[in-house]
Amino acid sequence: MTAARSAKGMEAALRAAGYRLTPHINLICNRCGKIQDLAEPLPLSPEYLAAKEGFQVMDYRMEYYGLCPACQGRIKNQHSATNPKKGDQHEQP
Image 1 (cartoon, rainbow, N blue to C red):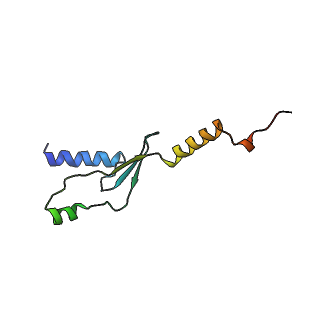
Image 2: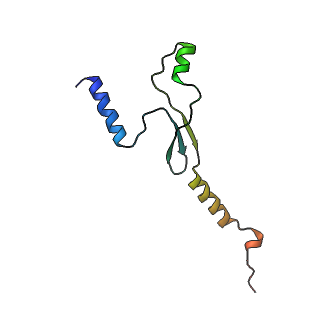
């Protein structure tokens, strides 16, 4: 098997598994591990770097790490449950 055929087979397998192979940004949750693809413009395009610096980009990654909205909500709910507001407490008679 040639390297080109092997690479095409790997690319097909990655696409079938749900991987996005076009340039994009990954938002990665530190808590649950969810990875969200974000199709926003990247800071520097490979074409720009080729024209400006003469550098041929072969691959690159853009990853941001933090907390997804669901995990932020879980943390907020956990915090609220352990630290109720003074007006939320009911006194026993």
